[in-house]
Amino acid sequence: MRNNLLLIQQISVPLAGIVVGALLAITGCSPKTVTNPPNNAATQATPASTEKATAYQVPVEYYTLDNGLKVVLSPDKTAPIATVAIYYNIGFRIEPKNRTGFAHLFEHMMFQGSQNLGKMEFIQLVQKNGGILNGSTRFDFTNYFQIVPAHKLETMLWAEADRMRGLNITQENLTNQQGVVKNEVKVNVLNQPYGGFPWLDMPQYANKNWHNAHNFYGDLKDLDAANLDDVKSFFKTYYSPNNAALVIVGDFEPSQAKTWINQYFKDIPQATLPPKVDLTEPRQEKEQRFSKDDKLATKPALAFAYHMPDKNTPEYYAMGLLDQILIQGQDSRLYQALVQERGYSGSVDGGINSGLGNMFNYNGPMLWDGSLIYDNNVSADSIIAVVDREIKKLETQGITQEMLDLALIKMRSSLYDQISQLYGFGKADLLASFALFDNDPNRINKLESEFKKVTPALMQKTIREYLRPTNRTILTINPQAKS
Picture: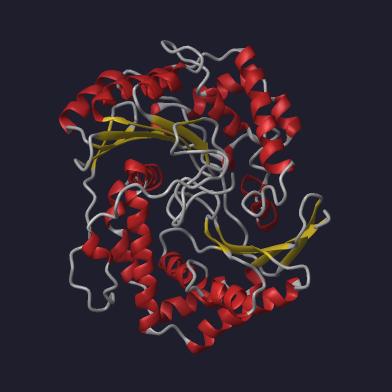
């Protein structure tokens, strides 16, 4: 459960509480993309410098209710289905100290019943109407979504509004879900080889600010310490309309959807939100190295991570393209050098916000990382030396226009894959993130142009500042089990 809902290459759920239907599984399986990328002609390998085609445009209608609920509508008549996604602006980073894992615990509580739906009846309502659903907790949001036949859209809006209006918060439900979450931690992290590596481990080693560096899954003692007053306060504070974005994607009429949204959500009272948490990280000036014993692992593993540029800066977009050049796909520099040429490992994984999202759905400091499990006769230093050589080549020899064009093609293809994944959920994920964090869901239609502004000179500048060894954290896993 370390992959994310919407990585460039795959879909799954690292911290999901509930899964219904065959398309999603918390065991780490990755459903295949179920629709073709939109506007296939636009994904052809035409060099960016000569491209004349008009970029694909996602329909976006955006407005805010009087109670602060952000609403994004994106009609798509491709299939008679509708996706409803609601994102709350509360994730791991701003959960209370001494209550690690609380944001994730609360995700589970959202399925324990509301004013008009009993325990687990929300799930049954979706399933019996032919739909699927899920929820997950990430760095900066907790999300819930349902994918249903289009004629059941109103039902889903009513159900989401019902639990936003109020949960059935009882000691019995809390105690039950504390046990569920603790078991999830044991099954997916503590009792798995490489459990939590590197998606859960690396932020704790690379970051200095507690909000970015604590155990997001939760220490077992902290999960036990959560009480009923904590839950009630958390719900009242963070699960309010003025801390949320509601997105509808699919086959619906916007005028009818607006009527239903107004009917079910407009009278839910807003909350007084706490001041924003300071998430800033100090500039890293010295390489950090750590090691961790793993009693269940039979081979060593290594992860490296570099602090990212601030989101939405020119360097941020340059890092997105460097990610494509260095680690995404079998044509990437690190895959070729570590797997194809030297055979150190069978794969190299990683990226921006890898394991917990994508480069667009977060709102704070972030890491670009890579990881691999490698043979016992290979040294960690030899792997890092290869990484350094490949990065140094780009810095000293420069980025050619041909390399930049190929990176743009890969980025555009992966972006279209994200938009088209899982019956519209991929599109909803981006729209909700841009609404929550940027107050501009139409950013989804500006991404291509932002990446096209990146020049070879900017990429070299970004390498020098952000891919320097002194901005790096290295974590190695020492295997303790016999092979």
